[in-house]
Length: 386
Image (tube, rainbow, N blue to C red):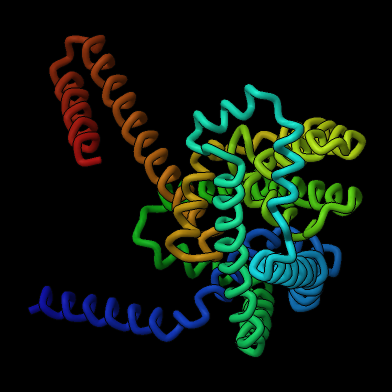
């Protein structure tokens, strides 16, 4: 009877949990980013609280204002301008105002024979065919962004509600951090050692990933957008956002944007701007990854670039823009879980081997030998269960 009651209670808890998640699903994005920002800015809140004599309310409110100033406002500003530039680009291409044919004619005259042969080898028989492909790509990509922008514009109230909810949730998560941490520790069905190790490794990987990948990507995108603006290249905000996303891609990254533009400028005779953009892209945008990333990460363990790239792209494909955060989080959970399991099994095996060696070297005392053999059997059983 007792087992039936336990099973029924467990089923009830699972059903209620799913129902609670279902009613919160419309605000999933706001909750997700509120929790992520709380994890990222919790150390700042603790520092402010110490300097204010432990006043968590004021410390949490101050942190929320900082987040609003350095995260939310710039993100909304850049996103709005990028969407406007995407819509303008789509309208210019769709109406024919942006004449790609003239650009390709200039490029045709400047390209050497081997470059034209390379285009043929790549399956582009003429620059006209290349123009058609790029034109279709620009239309498709800018149309997607423009559609999303129109959707956001039509649901501006919904977006505002999400932002307010995220900041509201962030305040209480920061204020009640200690109590929430104790509650999560109590409800997690793990022993204390595994739970602490899992949480610690997860936080290290996530913070290293956010600092080492997301911030560097934003920095590279900002540097690229600023140079495009300084050189008078149309759509600097849009291309800066594109470079920020591509910065997550190892090796090539932002060069997929600035390198073709530099080549075009050089091929069409604009040597000054072309050389400036090429040198700036190699020495400033490219080296920012190698210089700034180690400074931000320090000795923290981070995920490999290819893992970040694959998990980010997979997250975006599965969850939309929220996947930028969800993908690396799931990857970090995966890596942390397997690392803990591997470490636990290795420690258990080492313990079992140490007991076995101790048994082999023990004195001939039958009682002591039997006791050590029993210890070895217990350790071996524990190892197998793990």
